[in-house]
Length: 285
Image (cartoon, rainbow, N blue to C red; front, side, top):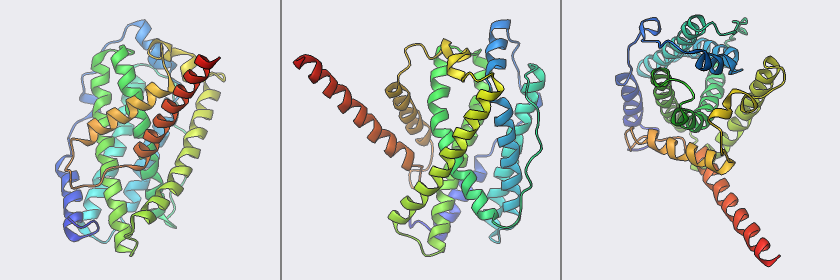
């Protein structure tokens, strides 16, 4: 299958549409939480930012969908907008049910000047958030940080986010091919530029989360229960392993996010070499 071809477009759009799952956030089986679990859930300082991000995502994706000429691509992007808006509603339901302190601040206005660029910015940000989230989610779930029924609900969101980033990466490649930019190195340069901006936005989100939590970051408060024995190498390994597992559920002919996993593997190699060099130096000492 040629990337950027009509067959490619049909494949990534129709698979995305066919894999859509209908559910009502308010009708889900939300578990009752004991006080310790409630304290951990309420202590996560990023719920307000996450809610804002999902609301903004829904607005951007829906607005961009209305500008797309191709009917199949428009249908798929509009469906993603619906799912992003549903993510925001799911968070609202959770916030109300568990009395979490998270206000809805006003959304910045979505302008029509560069909706395609805004959608691309959002897509790369979602790729970054998902890759890191895979590792955090796996570690937290394995540690029993929250009751399993709550992780089951969050896993529905994780599956949808995985679908979104696979769709986005293929959409981006299709867009670039349609613009005559088929070379893989061009896609790499574009990815690096957008990921750089996504990292900047993520750091800003973390800073706002710390301000909302009296300057403390999440790992210094409620996360200690699942970060016992935490190392950077372990976290990166978990991100890579979980990324590969989740990507394995998709059509092997479709593109998958590779930029971040490749950087992560290089980082793991560097960490391994660094550990080995320190060991040699200690033996010589």
